[in-house]
Length: 114
Length: 114
DNA sequence: CTACTGTATCGATAGTTGTCAATATGTGGA
DNA sequence: TCCACATATTGACAACTATCGATACAGTAG
Image 1 (cartoon, rainbow over the protein chains, first blue to last red):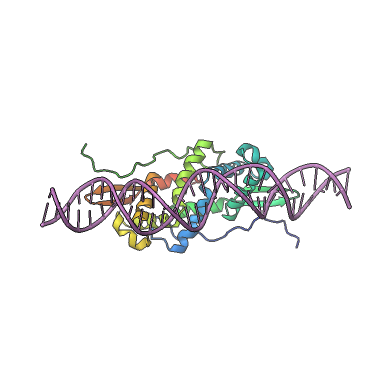
Image 2 (tube, protein in one colour):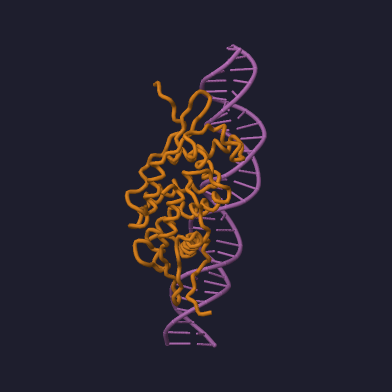
């Protein structure tokens, strides 16, 4: 192995083929979309995402202060966003650099009728 | 008063002026957006919304069977979606008719970088 | 007014989640 | 090797939520 690690495993599920506003959702589609939206339904995670998106990439250690949260809490939130495919992390040395995944956000908007 | 009642009170908060992807969110913006997204982060509510949106309007009593949930549970979910401004209810006689609020969905998509 | 019916609310319960202190893991430097 | 530091994980706790049975409320019809 010689690969730069992407920290937690992302849930790359394809959200849903059609939009919520078009046709009744199947149970599995609803569960998948709800999972991703749950990742976004927390104020700390939304602020975290906006902080990362505002710059090209941000180190975990630079998130604690602006968020006002402890290191384990920040780690927890980055993990949730990463597993939802919204954030992508890259470990370089001792640090993990996070950047947003705009395509995933586009998928979510599309599932919401965009 | 002689107005056809809109059942629960909708939270008409303006979500946020800018998108999550553009600039760091203020605490209040994050809380408001998170509240609305939390209303969408449940599989039952997503299916409920898709059922309502697929038709012009749907009566509460016609939701229990397709959702497979009890009447109090359906009532709970419609209330949550209504308070988030995503669903609008109109009481006519003994029935409540629900229809989707596409503008609210558009607001949400915009806040998500649309 | 009374009976019936659709909806909302209450109370209880099980499951989930955000938070942090403590600890473990991993990485680079001396 | 040993230390320092960035991050992840664990364990515990409080707060929240989805669910349903029981019940209250609000209209309609008789």
